Length: 184
Image (cartoon, rainbow, N blue to C red; front, top):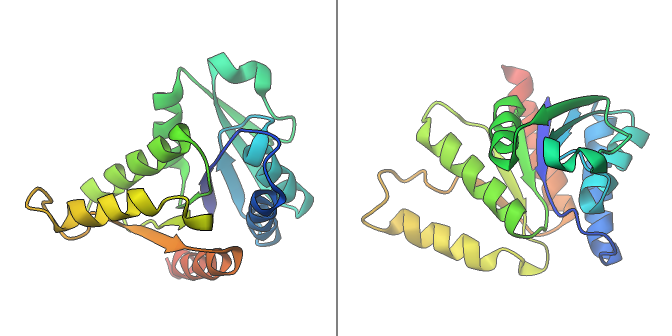
């Protein structure tokens, strides 16, 4: 299973965020999955990649040409893209499931773009697990619920995100997605 992970590339984050990324990477590796991520050697991106690598998983870095100088040496495969939009499209196409860890505007953009893409395609049942650690994404979650309940939503499947609050819930939901994937 290819798992796309969207997260921060910022270094020097508190240990609780590092632990979350390490838990995710460890699960991906131990279950012999492939991490598909932004490909850079920084922040939660690198921490997730390192944990995946150390646990025996494969790593595919999808990186825009402009960031190639930040390429993570842990990548088993590198997909170079024109820009950030091309990177998002490639990651969405490659992934069987998605995980959103804490991050900034780029992470939020990747989450919402993925949500829009899989919502448009009614046959697309890939899950997006959102780690709402410390209520990081409460405002966006409320907005998605409000939008889904509004007159502007075409269907009731607008928010296909699976919200979790901690690492244990994240792993529980990943295991459910893995079981669904294995049935295919």
